[in-house]
Length: 194
Image (tube, rainbow, N blue to C red):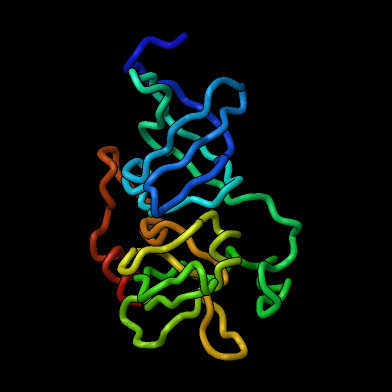
């Protein structure tokens, strides 16, 4: 038993997460009680939601109300069968996904019940179509209007479409000094302005 307030690292699966309720639960790989995952903890990680069955690493603590996630360390999308999430994405796109640049974007709107929405890449006027299955394959359950995200974008049969979605800060260069600061602020700004 862990002392109340002390943190420990847990890996597990998201049992469910409801963005409208603002919370969900994680199943610890090692068993035990469900772990409360609050929307505020996800927001601190740069996300507004997480897809069911995503694998997460979280720092948890015991509280008077039970075990709760205090910090999200990582999120891996739910496992897939290797096929594209939608027919408009060619299998070749999926195999070479990491070669596509991550573009910082903002959600224009997304309607989970309709199964799609749109975002705008910073510095570009064109809408980028986001399908709910691409969202789920990327580890998200929903998107909020105005949410900052990153997109890998392809030209679809009807225009630009998201092939992958990730947290907004994934578009930032990973070169940091010992204090966690980016070495060259000019490079960061150039990347955002592309």
